[in-house]
Length: 197
Length: 197
Image (tube, rainbow over all chains, first blue to last red; front, side):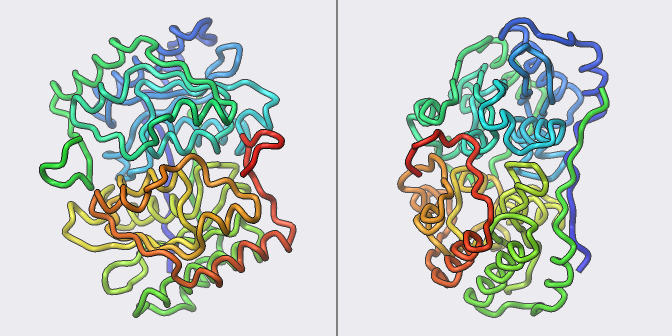
C-alpha cells in the first residue's frame, strides 16, 4: 500500500495578508479584527468556510493563522481552530503550545468552537480562548456546532483555560451572513433531513 | 511570512504492516484485531501513543489506517481517529466519507474517542463507530479523555451514527497497559497538578 498523506497548507493569499498586517497586535480587539478579516478574505477568495482563527503569544505576536479549509481540502477536520493549533505547534516545535504552562498563548476564533474544536483545545496547550460570534450566529445560517457539552466554558476554566466571548461579535457574525449572501455552501454531512440545527 | 505547513504522514512501517494483512476483513473482530495490532506496533516502534484506528467500507476493505502521532509529530490533534478520518477523506477525495449517506463506512478505534475525536466524528461522514477499550481503560493509565458529553453514544445515534463498544476490549486495553510498562509518555498538557483524571 502506498500510504496516503495530507499536507495542511494555508491558501497563498494568507502570506500576503499576514505581511500587510501589524507585527504586534496590541489588544484583544486588534487580534480579533485580524482573524475576522482573515475569515472575510477566506470567503472572498472562496478558499473555505467563513471561519478564521490564530494563535498569539502574550505580547500579541502572531504565531500562526488558521482558516477553514474543509471544502477545498476535502477534509472535515480542517476547521480554522484546528489549522491554527496544528500550525502553531509546527512553528514552535512542540505539541504543548504553552510548554507546561510556562507561556501564555491565546487562540482567537471568529466563532465559538464546535464540538471537535472545543475538544481539541485542552490538548493544544493554549491558555486562553477568545471568541467573536456565538454558536447561535453560526446556527442562524445553518451550521451545526455538534454535540458540545452545555457548560463548555466552565470545562475549559477547570483546565486552566480562560474564555472570553463576544469580542467584536457583530463584526464576526456579519461574515457568516455574507457567506450565505455569496452563495457559500453549508456543509453538515450527517445532518438528517428535517433535523433541527 | 513564510506560511508554516504540516504533512500528516504515517510511519513507514505502516505500509509494510498493511501489505502483510488481509485485503478484506470479514467481520468486525478481524477489523478490530487489525487496529489493535497497529496500536501495538506503534508503541513497539515508538512512533506514538498506544492508539490505533482505521476506516473500513461495508465489505470490510481497509480505506485508510490511523495511528496516534502526537509526540513524534509535535501535534496534539494527531490522534489515531483524526489521522484515519483525514487520510480516508484524502483517499476518497471527499470530506464527507459516506457521501451524503450513500455508503456505509465505519471508523474502528482501539479506545473510545476523546472529546476531540468524538466531536470530529459527526463531521467525518462515517456511519458507524466501533470501539475496543473503554474510556476507563485509558484513564487507568493516566490518559485524560477530556470533557466529552455523558450520553455521547446517544448523541451519535441521533445523527445516524451507530456505535458498537467493547469489541476485543481486553486485548485493546492490554496495549494501553503495555505502553506504560515500556515507559511510554502520558501527555496531558493542561492537566493541573493534583487534578484527578
